[in-house]
Length: 109
Image (cartoon, rainbow, N blue to C red; front, side, top):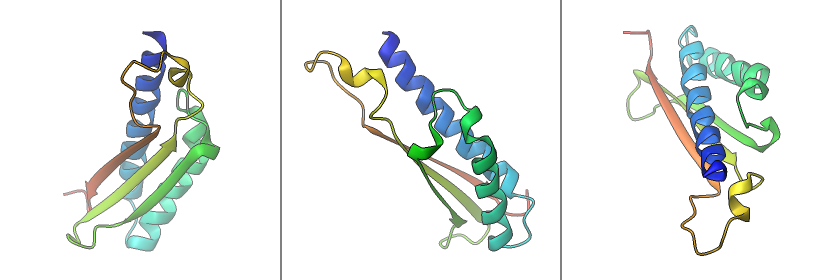
């Protein structure tokens, strides 16, 4: 149960980081500024999230090209170092890569 709890803690941290970066990016006037703000937030704060090793994080930030009124922060986290993978092989295991996305409306409307 502890190993699963650690995995779910990391999953929550990745989702929260994506949401926080998206909220930070809303201050940008264009896609370039929003990308810079979101990436800077992640660079400065990723190590402060529980169970997250910044070196195992992949970041993709961009305007949603299908809806120009939305900005998307997508994070992928390589969770292979978490202790859940040392459990019995017969137990169902989650994905080894945690992927989470947060979308925010451009302009804050």
